[in-house]
Each structure stands twice: as structure tokens, then as C-alpha cells.
Image: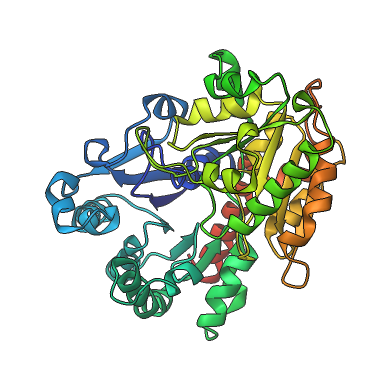
Length: 431
């Protein structure tokens, strides 16, 4: 069996969304002849609250931990990035592992981004093929809009300088969507397109199996249901450039409220919008709803909740909601867990998002898809959104999506794709 070292600074019990690439891939790679070892930061050094239940859900994978400068020491100096305060520890532990044990391939997933700098160093010393995986763009449109002398602006400038230097040593570039790596190629046209591949994060039915074995109520859904109307739930961080899409949705909700009685207007529930740990945090969605005059129909739980509880929100809601942004690359990896929840999904996305091609594989009972672009932006889709919201009702759970249509997007299907690309890379290098 071939062996791969997966470097992912965040890994369960970390509760950040970025853990799921490494978590799902490591769980399923052995099915296809690859034995993973995950190299991750030590839980005591994570800044976010740990999620012990997610760690239990992720058992069975070998994980090696490294220590980092604790955020209590670095935050006073404005330094929280785990790939900076953990960089030296990660390099030392990776070096020791590779010197002591045989590995066939090095896989680093970003964000956090500065971990990518370790790839060229380790490749040069140990001669391993280096795979770099992008869950989000390193150089982004949002970063370009930040003040040049702000911390975000300085990170953006550093990314513009460092990204091409790292790519010079990359053997295979993967990303959550073709749009994500297309933007990288536009900035670095010398990088060979044939050394790129797109793999979404995916979803794993095993996670819902765990939930079924450990049932629990869903307080956020119960709160939203008190209005006596169906609940449409959206779980996850609100996209930084998603305000226009949300505004169109709330305009549609206001239109529907003018035509129907209150209990016929669905409750929209947003959970984890800030992406920040549990605790006091300012809402993001409610101010938009207030300006649109639909605040009574909108509920927001800004803080991030434990992963199993987030899945439980999806399981208990009547419909599910996915909102995109005006950035074409935006992929919303949570689409795949949504499908596994077997509830109707209302999705509004840019036409070039990878979500659109996947969503169109779903049947009409599973998906109401609204597509916008620069010529017909989200604000022109209010009427379509109104019609979709008018369809929302309480109903039985749907049958599982057709397996053949979505197998490539399951955790197992994605691991198969990665294993094939890993093996092909080794063959091309004669190893």
C-alpha cells in the first residue's frame, strides 16, 4: 500500500470547516490503496473551541500532532494565523516523520496558506512528489479590495509574491472547483493545466449514520418553528460577497409576505454565519433582513456550532438553503451534506459556480436552482426566488439522491479520484 503524508494544520477536534478535506480524504483513501498519516496542530494550541464529538466521528486515522506558539502569546502582537505560529513546529515534525518513515507523496491543503511554504522545502530534502490543494483562493478578489497597509492587505501582497514561488515546486495542483484553479492559472499561465484537478470536499453518509445513532433535538430549528411555519435552514459561514444574493432573497420573502398569511411564509434560519466560535458575536444576516422589512421571518445564530449539531439542523429543517456570491469560483462545499439530509434545497448561485453543474444533476424534487451572472445579477431574480419560496412546505423526507449521479461527489468517490491522480503522478515520475 502506498503512503501519503497529509498536512492539515486544522484537524478534529478543531471545528473549523477546513478540517473536512483532510478528514474525509484520510477516512476513505485506504479503500483505494493509499495509507494516510495526517500531520496536524495540537488541539491545546487551537484558538477555536474544540469539538470532541467530531474527533470521535473521525476515529480510525493515524494523526501525528505538532506544537505551536500559543495564541495567548501571539495575539497581543496581532498574530493568530496557525500556519505562521505553527510553521516551525510543523516543519520539524514533518522532517522527523519523513526521515524516519517511508512515504510516497506529500499532500498539503490550504487554507491556512503559509503551510504551503513547507512543500518546496520538504520536496527538495526528501524528493517526494508535492500535491498542493486549494480549499479557498490564496490570492482573492476580497483581499485585493482591502487597504494596502491593513493586515489583510499585507497578507494579500504576500500571497501575490509567494504563490508563484510555491507553484514552481508543485507536481499536482488540486482545488475544490475548476474555477478556483482557473484563477490560479490566469495569474500563473506557465503552470501546466494538465497538472490540475478539481475535487469538491464532498459528503459522507457515515456522518449521518453517526447522527442517527446519537439522536438529539435541534434547538435552532425548534426556535424558528415557533412561528408555526416551515423552516428553511442555511448552515455555514455567510459568503463575504454574498450580500446581493441575500438581499434578493429577502426582497422575495417580503413579496411573498404581502401575498400570504404569516404562517404560510417560511422561517429562514441561518446558523454559523460568522464562522466564529460559540459566544457573543454580531449578526450578519439580521441587519440585511431588517432593512428589507422581513426581520420577523428571519432567525440567525451567528456563532459556529459543533459539527454533529450542524448536521442535525439540516436533518430537522423542512427545506435547506444555499446562497452563493458574485464570485464565480465560490463552490459551497456544504452542498453535499445538504443532499445527504434528503430535504428539498433552494439554491441561488453564479452561473459559473461548480455548484450549478452538480445541482443540475439533482431531480426537481431535490433542488430548486436559481442562476445569475453579470448580465442578469441576483437582484433580477426576485420573482424566481418568490416562486421558489412559495413552494416551501412541510413534507416527508425525500429518497436519497440517485447514487450514480452523485457518487463522484461522495467522500468515497473523491478519494478514488485522488488515489488515481496520486498513482498516475508516481507512474509519471517512475516511482
